[in-house]
Amino acid sequence: LVLSEFPKAKFLLMEKGSQETELKELAQALGVAESVIFTGWVPAEELPRYIASADIYVSTSLSDAGLAASTAEAMACGLPAIITDFGDNRKWVEDGVNGFIIPLKAPEVLASKIIHLIKDEETRKRFGRISREIIMERNNWEKEMGKMGNLYQELIEKWKR
Image (cartoon, rainbow, N blue to C red; front, side, top):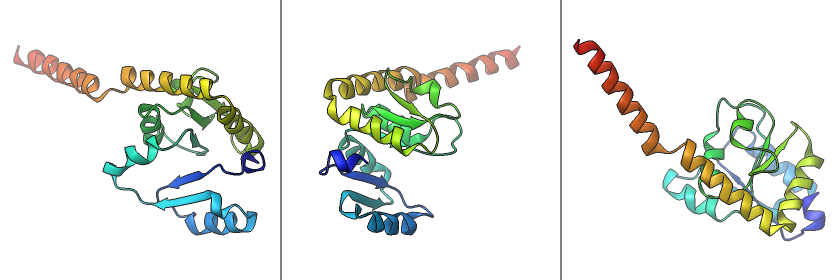
C-alpha cells in the first residue's frame, strides 16, 4: 500500500525471528522484496546507527508487556512512532502528539499513517522531538538509577534504627 504511492520507500526489519523465512517468502510473493531489508540480529552497539537511519518507527506487535525496548530506543533516537493499541503503548505514544496508535491487524490504517508521515516532514520531525523528550524525561537511566539509589538509602536508614 505504501509502495504504490512511494515506490522508493524502504522497510527495515530488524532482528531474527521465528517468522523470518515466512516473511521473506511473503515479500517475494507480493513483489516487494527489493523494498524490504532484513537485517537479522544486530549487535546492541550498532542499533543506534540503524535506528537513526530511519525516518519512522513502526511496531505492529500483538503482545508486549510495558514499553517495548525497540519503541523506547526509537523514541530516544527521535523517531515518530506508529504502534498498535494494546498494553502500555498509550502511556508512551499519544495519538497525534508524538506518533500514531493504530488498531491491531489494520494494514490500511497503518499504511495511511506511514504515508501521512512520509508526506508531512514537519509533523514527522515534531513527533520525533516530542518522543525524545518523553523518553529523556520518563525513561532516563540516570534518573531511574537515582530513584533506586534513594530507595536503597531509605531502606538502609530504616533498618539501621
